[in-house]
Length: 293
Image 1 (cartoon, rainbow, N blue to C red):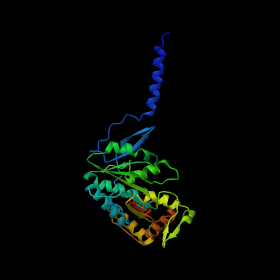
Image 2 (image 1 turned 180 degrees about the horizontal axis):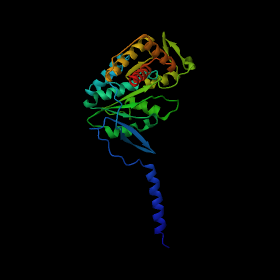
Image 3 (image 1 turned 90 degrees about the horizontal axis):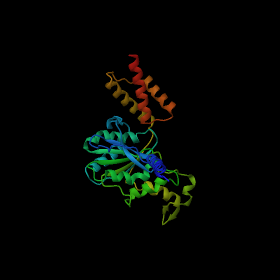
Image 4 (image 1 turned 60 degrees about the vertical axis):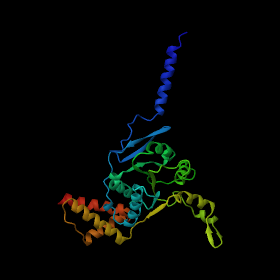
């Protein structure tokens, strides 16, 4: 009995199934010309995919968050210089400039060797695989987890704790982790979390639920908070963005009471006074003016 054709058919089916599990063939990232990459998961493995273009956000564009910008920029400069530097948690309300600040840092310091790898929450278990690919390279990498939050029981929670704590999953010396989140402790907080708090020698000691939630965020050496603007600050940021857009397009910068009222109404419609809202209004208003000139 000739089993060869049947065996070949089975082998072909096995190889076809294995190919479905393997990541697509991708060229290695050339970090000499690539400043940012994404980690792409595929079945049980993954690969780094170069990002062809980065939004051209500049540090000078980030008005209204000067204190936060200075803190994170100083930490990044320490890192680039090979000095001690901290992993960073940028937390606060949406639209307040957390992600934009990280992109602006890349645009400013890429020529000095700064690189960014963006990692989604579900890919945090792959951090050790990413470390293997970049350990020892002559660049400084920020691993960016953007808009990160966990629910109780998420697989990546304990792995990220281990990475930040310097245990078996510790990041190499040329890597820092920057996380942006709307949650200060990266986990949902409930009213009854504080019911386990107690007084010991005049000091408040949190209950187990709160201690567990703090245990991750506490591993970030630098916390930087971002908040919504008061109206005067919001209007100041709108005015500066309008002036910049006008200069970029050859218009004379203007500011008057009607424009101020329009900016306030825009923030009411968006239900938020923040840097993103101010920037969006400035783009809209200057664009309308350019169309009508």
